[in-house]
Image (cartoon, rainbow, N blue to C red; front, side):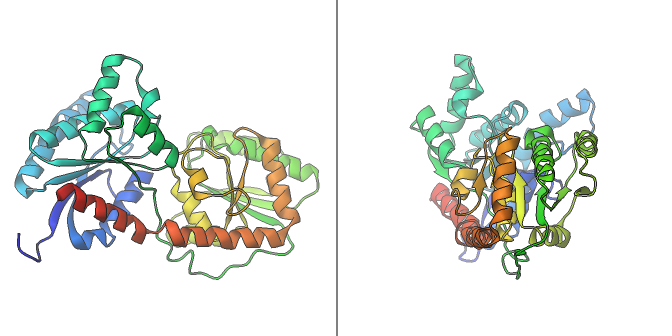
Length: 364
């Protein structure tokens, strides 16, 4: 290999234009310093929300492994980077890709983006054996949280598992001046899909309680999803039309302005991996009030970088918001700590360094 030649790595993922966490992750890898050391070849997978007939889905499932084999043969890339999750459809697809790569003598880095723990994924012994082989045969498996790290090690100690959390580009967020108002309405924000499992209906119940207490606040909900109309109806029923706005999906500078202009990021989700919106909010100095699910407890310390509330507990959420409203100095202090937390541990620079070290280990 010539000194200037970069080793090739095939990175799996949806279109970088798609609206998903994995798309964001792939886009960041392709634009990071990792792409200076390695030639990253994007292999596009997934339907990305396209409406397809059963025949089209079957054709895509059958043909894409052949397309992968051709790409590996033409490029000579010795390593593939799967961006997988333990959901049934994605798991079987990625298992086939892993088999194709292994048959062609390629090494596999298997990045798991959330989903059930491996102990919970299959009950049938044969299916659990296949899952174990899928994980053990990978040169590296990465997970998002310390809880997942312990679970995968417990599932099979032969799995070479590493903890590599998500990251964000802090530019436009952490480098911008901001201030939390000492008085005035408490500015609240949510960014993400509008689905019941994000805890948004409990958030409306909590705000209805704050309204009864005579508190002043504004909540802007950015995003879209199947429960948007039901949520709008809940807002009207609670008498919160003037205080809660559904502003649609926001991106880029508009999302940055939303987070930089908000005091609190409301995120009472029932389950998560490691949400990018939470990391971006913290980078903006927006204090998260979130549930301790998925990798979120790795990112936040209670009372230091944000506040925790139990899932599906609107009364606890109302109390947490009221406590921040009553102590704006504490609110500002937590916001500064949240921003420092992201800059120290959750930047794209760190992500590229982590995967660079793992790529080099796989290729050694």
